[in-house]
Length: 119
Image 1 (cartoon, rainbow, N blue to C red):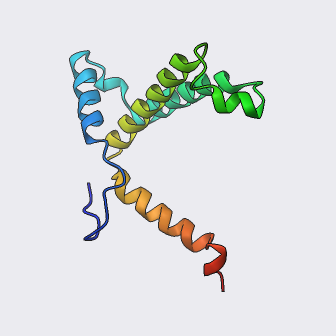
Image 2: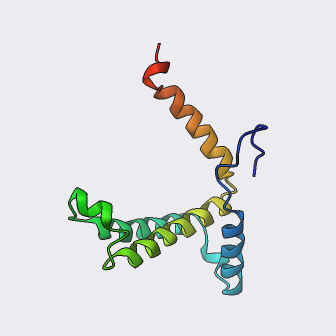
């Protein structure tokens, strides 16, 4: 992980999760299945399962989906699955997510300046 400039907090640190997932996959001899292609496909599937929980909800219901007893556990589980596959993919590709996020936020700030910063 890159070191942020002095005084800047770390924005993304998934090393603990990535290590736990590596050990989990290693113990089950799954590392051979964790190619970037397979992980992206699995991530897409999990995002699809998350989308399914929101499909056909109106705006008000979509705001309550994580607190509604009928859907809360499923939402948490699918968000966890998405994060797990996302973190695993970044680890396999050796992407420094903190640096990537910092770079993207800076690019977005340049591309979409706040109204008081335009001009």
